[in-house]
Length: 319
Image (cartoon, rainbow, N blue to C red; front, top):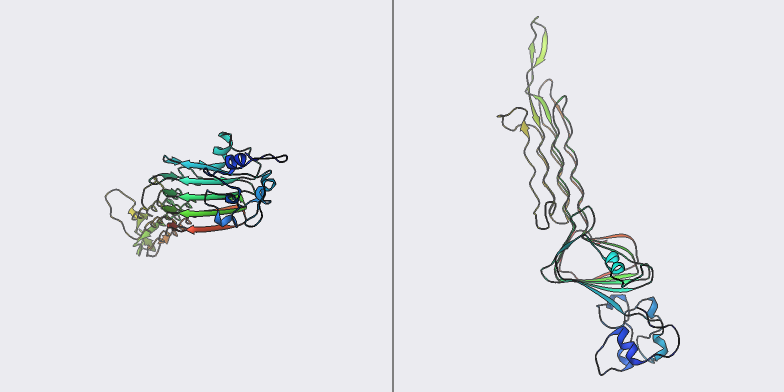
């Protein structure tokens, strides 16, 4: 809630808006030198506080129309956290004015993207600033595995693994500063499916009339790709790709393409292998591409500046 835009104000009103403990004085309320200094305390440097100096002469009228910090703390594990919805639904923000938000993720807490969205989505306004203090684990959902290519009526290509999802998605923010004492990890990409292999071992023989004919051969389906890290749950590891397999029950695997491995946190999945059948009638499907890595931090658009002040463990791209 912003301070009044005109009239006289008291030191007590400034304290209510901007914090601080008694005894207080006006020279405790200089503005931060820049957004990168924003750590959830003090007077944040953003547009509603433009009249407040960073040093030197300071007076009560400088605080007319100024705004303090909104702090939200996640203290229990959750999925698909939307900062904008939380602020609006809690009556802390009207959804349109510039705000300074300090988001805290407590130690031992998981914030996980269980659906096809980021674990944390922060859509604010282009004049707002955001501080993220993470002591837990923020983890995007991994990508699904690609299907293996089958062989009937012809060898099919393996399908691509799915893309992993980002841990944090940012949009319309003047400046964000991140202090990561835990983990920020994009989901792993899914492994690509292996290609099918048809009529392996076919050879040049003769038909019933004694004419040359290409005969024989076995068929092998491509293997499934592996799941990307955190596809099945917030803690699931990347899975290996499955081997190719014989068309009929009881047969062993052979020249069909094996599935590609799923990617680890913030890593791409591996491509599936192509089929490798040989013989006069052999044909092969190609392996599916591995899914792209999920980003640790994704800039959807309108993010003017970002500072990672404390790195911690980050897996995946950060913009």
